[in-house]
Length: 486
Image 1 (cartoon, rainbow, N blue to C red):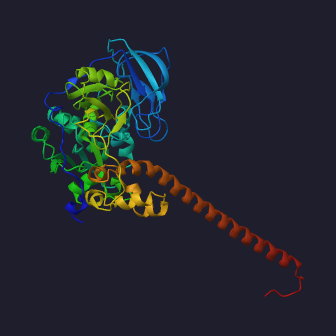
Image 2: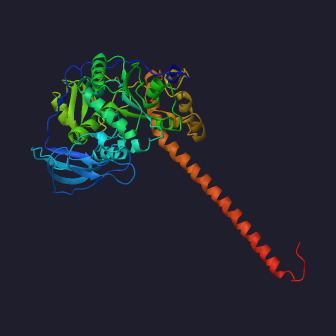
Image 3: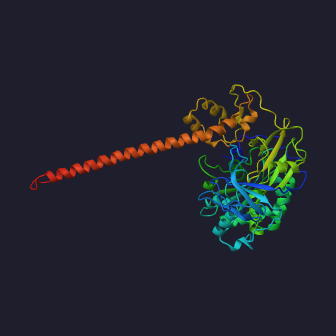
């Protein structure tokens, strides 16, 4: 397949990024309290290293990774731990999650052991991975997967190809665009550190064709670094071209197996924000205690991008933007296509918070009355994962696990393209998102049942064999000694 064929589907939709990209990155206001959820990354929640009444310094480790996939957490300010308790967090489930609450003393006293590395090239790749882990670095493109875990699982004989994702395709989100425009040298520094950690031969930085200022800044930074391993690839601004599998198809003309990972074809994909965070950790000794957050939408007075400390309340960021307008109707974390609707703004910024949309009815029109599917096929034409959403919808009623698995429900990337073009106003992506874990559990149950059945058959065969051997031995003992054996 060609890259064009691999990128079938997708949408050209209004970006809605002009308001938030007019001003440079600004520092968000400090607040009195910071709430640090322990499970703000993929994998297992971090384990607290502090307890209530402990004094902490800025950048001090406050939670360590659990065994397996997990990440370090650090204090964004100096102050006192006043509680470790369940607090509301900005995730789809909406349930409170165990969090460390820190009262800010306003002094920003740094942790003494926070030290930069003089040269990352002077340490081994394994040491580089370990150091990246201790910085609490996770993927800043949305999934917040611990970066060191991803690097360690992606190592291959000749070193994987590194792909830095700057294709910020989802509407309203512009944090990566302003990062590339203003801190391109950080991205290139982080790229070189990742190349060293992966023993990778080259790095491609992907950027969309509709951000000329960011392109120019990146090219200047790459030229200044004079590292022949790093190149820039301009990709079409088609949603969801920034999806990991879609971007790999565009850049490398290669397809990730539907049941595999990019590492299976020798590629490691990281977000440009992750690379910049690695640069600040290695060069300056600053762990991942802040990130750039886009705040936009017709429901806020002034849109922009803010360097925001982890744990900052959404309400504080909204205040930095001049507060809500009278047109505010809906709050979303993430973009307009894949974001999560929120009931209120008493929630902390976490490592995965790339955007907050205070939407008006003009920004995101309410979904119309749902009607029956008319089998028009529009959804299948725009699906970037080559699925047939109308068939998946059919097999959800009733839940036909065999057909859902056969038609690739678990390959759905939940991009929402099918929703966008559906004339019947069916919330397809939402239904698929809810059905995927149900199907995964059912398939696991089938596998467990098959494994149990195989163990049962093997046990019976083993017992039958032992019984036959036992009978043969008894027959041998009962045979007269002078009787010839056959």
